[in-house]
Length: 323
Length: 275
Image (cartoon, each protein chain N blue to C red):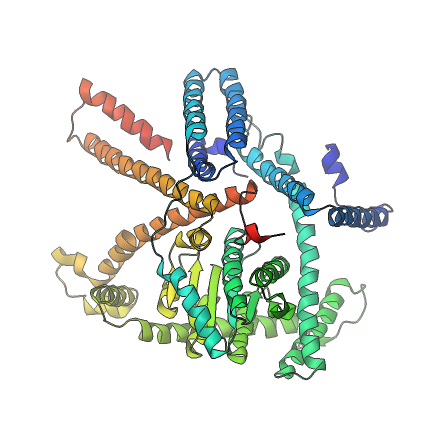
């Protein structure tokens, strides 16, 4: 069983990234500052209890400074600026796909992957809620095909509520939320048959996909279905790019719900992710410089001296932090 | 053993307390469900948020609380098995719901003779047959004669001979689909498409002996330009960093989504319109 004590530096780095993301969520939304500030205060006290007991004075001072800075920024920030997200082609095409399906009088198919009820599947269902609301507003039919039984229950609630929000609750058919199979290729053949028989006009594949992705997308390609895909499995991205009309690459999948809803909480989360990515980029660049410097020291290109000794120690410590 | 592990420890079906615990659990579960139904929406949401937070807090705390030297885990680690068993039991309930939904739909299609009702009837027959022979194989008393086909039990014949073979056949289709997808997608329409086509040709030829044979006679000083070396360079120095960059973005997105779900900060896309 892995624990943070296996590599404290990496665990602490993830905590820093999490705090950055939460900070941007909180400052984008009114009403969350006080509870979040209270949580920061509570965690500071708990962490200080550990570090002071262990006589880690450097860590204690660092925690105090970081907490003071965070609390100052949280309590003095203004939450009236809504961040903007760049245009994402795949998401702009959703309305086009739904409109096309409505004109052709054919249903829309949604597949939240073949994983279990986990983060990618929930993110996929989140996006499908928005799409189903558009489909409902157009008076069209939505088919949700799932490979995990709990997803069928959650998906049925999401689609039902989306149809109610779209003003057409009577159009929702519980039989259109289908558990196909939890076996990979039984699911693929079931969905392939569904696409052929129902003559699906638009297909949204958003979640965790594996080898069955190419079977599903190729069959849909043959029936003239417009396809928009997104996955957290980067091994499947090439297949989606080759067979689908639009693909959301990487974290565009997780940005989709913020892009579609313009909800301040979700937009703040995306900004927090971007700042976290910036921090990772800085660490990578510093790591490249430190590695190159240490190579030069080891090969003798840079001679040891009092000036380079400190630099060598810093570079060595930095590299050891992330091993 | 701690009190919590003692209360949630699995009880063998031969133990006299098994049926007492079984019916008590069902009653408590129904009671909790009834209570949740009676409560208004405004009261239900904080309870769900609290349970979600406590569930996630256990795993987070178990990961971050330091492990004493010489031990395998901290004071929360012994309860990991209990938490996994709770999650498995909840999963089992939902499997039943999925089966009911699946059979109900296909039963309706068969009874009403809807289009392609034959496939629905086939599914129901296969489901019943597989269930019967699986239960016979797993739970038949010792000494009872189990039907056999080709020296295997019917269950093994259907599973290994039928289901596994069909899985392999579907998997084999991917090879043909890759050819048709590549033929359609790899067209030189732009500069980027040209790069894609060139790198695809180099990588594909570098994976097979034909590629080695084509560039076998390149002088040793120019070994880098041999197809197998070029292919390895593209995969290791261009493809891998791009994959890692995508992985960083996905991991951060998953971290942000997990935090929002754990702390109940996730708002549905139509949250503001909920009653």
